[in-house]
Structures are given as C-alpha cells and as structure tokens.
Length: 204
Image (tube, rainbow, N blue to C red; front, side, top):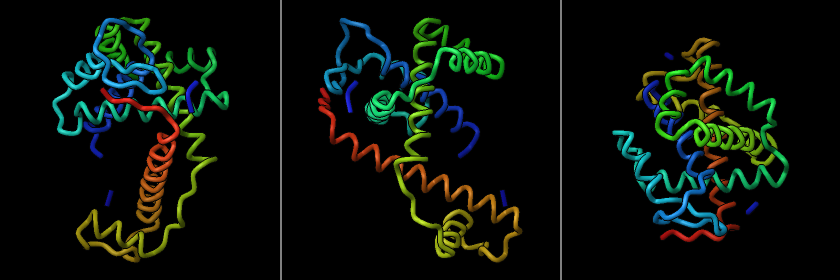
C-alpha cells in the first residue's frame, strides 16, 4: 500500500495552475474583456483563456480557473487584513530555492509572462500559500478521525481489499496523514465558500 484590501502529472498541473492563477490576481492590464469583478478588482478574460490553452486536461476549464482566481483573491485579502504577507527577504530566499529546484518551469513562466510579471505572480502565490496555512492552523476546525472513517477511506481507495487492522504501523500512519490532509482541504474549501459571501462578485 502506498474581505477587500494524485499523480505526479496532476501535481505538476496544479502547481503551474496555481502560479498562473496567482499571476491573474496580480496583473493590472487594460483594454481587455473582463471576466469578473471581485470588490471592483477585474479578472481578465484573456488571461484565463491563455491558461486554459496551455493545458490539455479535463479539470482545467474556464470555469474552474475563474473560480480558483476568485477563491484565491478572497484568501489573499484575508491574509493581507492580518498582515500575513511574505517579507522581501523571505521572498528572495523562496525565489532562489525555486530557481534552483525548478529552473525549467521558472524559465517557462518568464518566457510566457516576462520576468517582472512572473515574479509578481510568484509573490502573490507565496502570499496565498502562507495565508492558507494560517487559516488551516488557526481558523478552521476538522472533525476527529474515527475508525469508521479510516476503513471507509480504505474501502474507497482499495475496493475493500484492506481493513485498518490489516495494515502495518507505517501504513496506518501514511493513511491517517492522507485522510487528515483531505479533511483539512475540505474544511478550507468550505471556509472559502462561506467567506466569498462577504464579497461583491460580478461575473460577466
């Protein structure tokens, strides 16, 4: 078993989408069709089309990118309201590590968006990341994981082949961590959905 202010392939897709969507939030170009406004801030139709065009995956749709952008803006505003933003020194260190480990993807981003815009998007992406981490640790609550939850997880992922008591301690720890992360992600998404109700969102 293995307010204003998954597989490795899928992991890569989500990583790059995250960066691109962060770029959407930070860009300020004019003379483009507007896909939506969030508290008066525009999200540009052309930028969403550009992102969708870069991927050939059923989960990468116009609607999903637009909704992700709105969600991320909500999280960013919440973080900014509490002063949860990356410092210049922290961001410089983050970029050094990013370039060292993902130079190929960095070069692609610079080629597509230009270095200044891409770096701006990466900063927004980092701010989103630390705001999300704060929300998960300090704002939302998750239910305790029961034995029923653990066995249900195994049933769903392994078609009833395994039961909790059949696993080694290492396998139990791994399965528990996966369930916990899924619970946190669900709770975070529910929090964002509720938080969105505080914003003036107009979709064109």
